[in-house]
Amino acid sequence: DAKTTQPNSMESNEEEPVHLPCNHSTISGTDYIHWYRQLPSQGPEYVIHGLTSNVNNRMASLAIAEDRKSSTLILHRATLRDAAVYYCILRGIPSNTGKLIFGQGTTLQVKP
Amino acid sequence: NAGVTQTPKFRVLKTGQSMTLLCAQDMNHEYMYWYRQDPGMGLRLIHYSVGEGTTAKGEVPDGYNVSRLKKQNFLLGLESAAPSQTSVYFCASRSTILSTDTQYFGPGTRLTVL
Image (cartoon, rainbow over all chains, first blue to last red; front, side):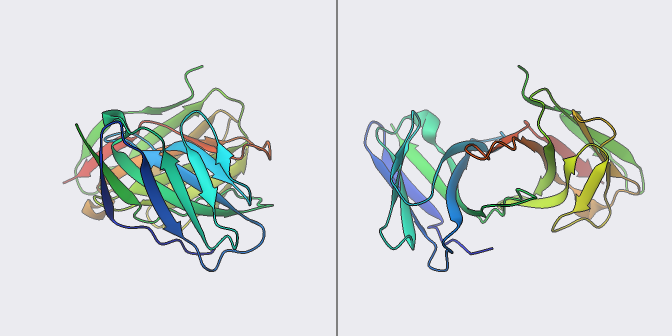
């Protein structure tokens, strides 16, 4: 599985946009980019995923570089509840196991 | 829908004791997973199952056994607990619908081995 690199931590102010970067220079053509987040004392939860085009959902947006070697998770308006560890994970398709390989992720602090 | 539930939420064991962690899901998912998370680390896969009656090893399977006798349940067993198994254990299940392919996690079981 291709590796991802994320900053260990980031800070944001409440109600401001947050851009969480992820580098994946060895991504293959069939790798999907998944983002999960883990709120304190909870299990991870799915945020968003994409392959080539930018994606939007109710939680966030995912911007994927044209060469797919990097991506950015965008929280349009951070709230205190968004303070969490954010994991960028590559998943190949098709996969008969669905295994997720977690790195250390980015710890996002949101200041009031 | 309860989603993914885990029993118990907390447990303290003495070295050498055994226990079973139960994971249950009500989403009719085929795939289920057991992860452990040590302080300050990401999750690591212990064992997983791609369907009822099947199991396979993940990254860190030593010291653990699993069973998937029913589709909705995935059990993780520790036969002889060691302090190195002190961790938070998360279960997850996954839909096989290609367009989603996301995992749904339980709330975790915090295990301390003394």
